[in-house]
Length: 114
Length: 117
Image (tube, rainbow over all chains, first blue to last red):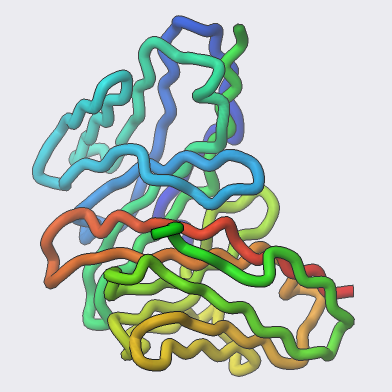
């Protein structure tokens, strides 16, 4: 039961252009969505989040858009830089009787070419 | 604070052996999570602690897996009678939060890679 889906395993973008990473979800009980970035040999690190009651959150070069009706969110990186090359995980938080749980997608590997 | 620390970083073991991983979270964090990641997949939730209480266990966590967090500080994840299918990266994460406020941002360790021969 894959509740968070990232259908693009990889994405290649030229330096300076926009990178758009997409994510779809199925569970309408998710109340926060997060993006994490992962470099090789390191654990994932938090990038940006958005509450389910918002439709946009911006932090510097990173903007996350949420379309609740479509159960879709996207991460925009502009301008893309070579240091952005990493695996990006879309994640969603759900609160249930056991407490908080964060569900991750399979990830999208971003290559930013200089 | 050095972040979330996991040991050992790499473990190679023979099938049938027991292994134990340790996680030291950020000291003031009250929540601790264990995830498993295999090649090409995202982190899969295994179990979660709020302070010393284990609040949820995934169906992925068979009876061979056990996790503890004594005194609400460090945590251990033990796998008994390892199988080749247990080969994966085991990630620990911690967070600070109360009730439902905030996004519950996770701080991950670098992981413990298990190879079962």
